[in-house]
Image (cartoon, rainbow, N blue to C red; front, side):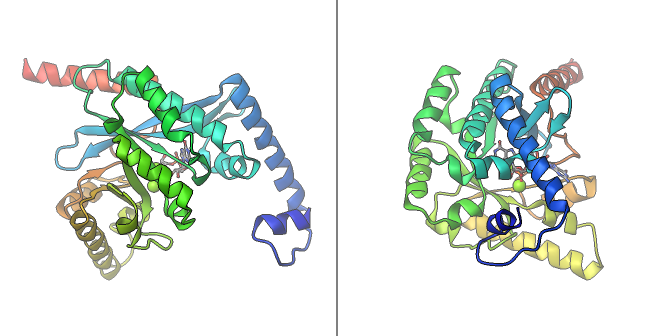
Length: 295
Ligand code: C2E
Ligand code: MG
Ligand code: MG
């Protein structure tokens, strides 16, 4: 058990066994089973969180976020699932299922008035960039009458760091097909600026830690955070990218980010990720409210 734990965290080292490894192994095994069952029994769902225009708060699109809805355990978040699904190789199937559900959800939303221009952002693991992905995506879009222009492929720099020509080719194909590419969690990790140059990136998503740092810490730290966000915005805009802020929880953060010139944002202030039924309800009530304001 100690040997496998060591291998998982990068090989070539030493690991002393302790009893907590048993719990970890048990939990891992359980989650592997949930994933297998979830695929068979249809427990996976694509929750949606709105992405709004910072200038007026209008919904521009939605990010699909994976949830495993276990009949007894309840909702399991992606943090518990993705790493294990990547290790066991089930991520390709899980990702495909989420993609299918998310596109279906967008098709349902598109039946409502005034939503035909909204977009759908889907997160992808590096292991999902198989040669067949563009074809599978094209077939799904055709089935649901959705234009590829409404799809955003969200990747993290982990995808680009692999510097795999095969992944590069798939990204290029998706981009030529009309989909946009978003670089998620930007500003953490290595965040090499050259990625913006070497890959067909259209959208930069500024990591939620930046949004948080606008309202925490000393005045000096907050001032420097504003400078950093402004710098990322300037470079991104000059590279022709749209900028989205993640993790907006307060009105002050919204106001500051809007003043700093960011284009879009998402966060609990606007709405939490939710099942499609709740999202349809939210969109319906907000369009009814608009209609009654006009009347
Ligand atoms: P992400 O793509 O950066 O997604 C944003 C995360 O921030 C989501 O967590 C969302 O629920 C959370 N969030 C949104 N607004 C706020 C806020 O105002 N405050 C705070 N504290 N958090 C906020 P979630 O749903 O747990 O997803 C975590 C990560 O899991 C995602 O980060 C993404 O990297 C990954 N993920 C989610 N769904 C999928 C999927 O279908 N496939 C793959 N490969 N990865 C996924
Ligand atoms: Mg994302
Ligand atoms: Mg993110």
